[in-house]
Length: 452
Image (cartoon, rainbow, N blue to C red):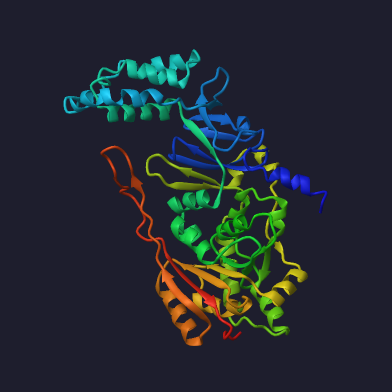
């Protein structure tokens, strides 16, 4: 245990990337998001150019890179944003000039730019950088000076994204993974929006030194988020499932968990937990046959990959999932620690004696009441629980039955609401494209009068 401690501490340094870690690449300020695993042979395709991801190894998270056209092949170079000290000084002098300009006299006939495509290709062959191409386009535009300041910045940003794309190196976390999946494949994570996701973890009181019981049918996102909150300290995560086949949890491999955290993320069937709770060999789960068929069908239709890429196209801002077999072969050689080992008998016995300290359920395909009446007796007294569902009626039925059976107190159904705003000078308004609902959460506290 002590011999593995230094290695675990080295991996826990989350400020710098290492070979074999998963990263989130933010291309052009959110126009495209890519999950990738860093290795010497991994590559990234931006437009029609393919560059190596090796320069990203050993760089701090939050670093910015810019795609440059090298003589042999494109490459990513470190980019440091310029300071904007002079912009504050010139702001007052530009206001009067800005008020006198507008775009009414500008005619968009594709004749304002004197620089042709052949000229740009020739500049690239000569080794001209992307920023120099952007400045050349601005200098050869006959209408750039006539535009408003807002239009000029919009034109500059558009050309920069095309000729000098930039990449932000981000750390994969529960928030970034949830946002990426929700934009294109919300059904893969049960339509779990970020605000509902954070509220779900808070209402279940996920803290360090907790033993959390999780029913995760959202690809492992919930299990990974709970393990992320627990950290490498004491406590454990028990991902339980109904039937003989565990639910897919490939998303958890994107979190870059250390061996210590992976050891505390365990799998155990609901039948084994109920048998340990009752101390008998009888079958407790009445829905095992039906749920086994459902879990097998979910396993067949799921993406059983260890790494996925999420692409957000600039046209519609949505994500596309690409299996790992489309990545480079060298990226598969770096294997991350695997979470989700079968729970040992000692851990099951400890959960039987003390009970779980929290319960979280995110199973849109299951009946909420059927799960709760089987799982709630596994909790310790006064333990909180939180149940997520896309629709209100299953949670309302579950809440009514809990009240009739007197199994919990403090029951409430919450509907979170998150709205993103664009905050700019004279242009502050809510974003036009947003989801209508983030789902519902039923929360409560188990009482000592509950019956198993």
